[in-house]
Amino acid sequence: MKFPKKLRYYCDLDDDMAKPLLDMPGRIMEAPRGTDLIVAGDAPTYGFVVEAGWAIRYTLLADGRRQVLNVLMPGDMFDLQVFIAAEADHSVTAITDMTVKTFKAEDLLNIFNLSGRLAQALWWASVQEEAMLREQIVRNGRRNAAERIAHFLLELHRRALIVDEGSGTGFRLPLTQTLIGDALGLTSIHVNRVLKRFRDEGMKAIAEHPDHTWKSNRAVKNTVRKPVTKAKTSPLPKFGKPVLATLVDEVPSGDDWLFEIKFDGYRAIAAASGGEVRIYTRNALDWTAKYPAIAQALGIAPSTGVVSRSRPLKRRARSSSVAPEKPLPTLPA
Image (tube, rainbow, N blue to C red):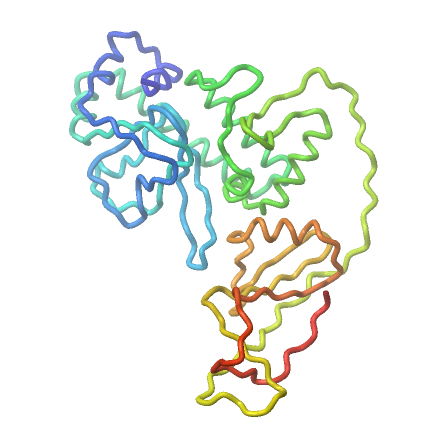
């Protein structure tokens, strides 16, 4: 069990003192990747201790954007609002296959009533978590992108070392670039560029393929970056309201019409310039975070203030019940 090992880092606990935690009643639960352990609005009836695997604690904004509040790894205890029967103001989702132990509030309280040293250790662990949240505020509020990512990775590395989930030079990091961006207020494109810069400067950042491992490459010294010539870019174009089709009762007559059968889907408008990309809904909501792969592809493509539209999957046909309000404008390629 990783939880006692984490507490030993903050407080002097021998095996006898930690034994009540090991013997604490509870249920071992396997949670496959993608499992929602906590859903915002729920009132949990038990708490969790992470035995194996990783999860994220996050909140969702009304338009679907996600803010990752923190990352949960082996040894972490979470959702202690069970002690006050409060509704969860966040969600927790497994990002790897997980093993967690559930416990009831009264069982943990009984242990602390028996051992003041265990209560002290949990208090110190809670103080450290509050300190990390303060660091998160400073990190996202004042540090630049490279500082945010480096600080975040080093923090995770230190936490992994405490519970023997890493070594002095690396640890397995199961976070995608999108998740890192959601934790640090960055787009996945920006995260990708910073990590590439780290690699170019002699640091093995997040491996593209199997391990997702952060390691410092100490063998590489005096690495000189090649100067990058920046292309001239224009500002991102302003949002333009799309021209939508209108419902009609009859199929128009004549040969000058093209009809289509439209399948359900989302209409998106993309603005790109100099690698910066924004993807909007037809109501001007910023949904860039929902389509990171599309945003990344558009960011790589050469563009100069181009606005493009993507429409739902469709099939052309000779019957339909829609006609355009006016001719569609020609957009730059």
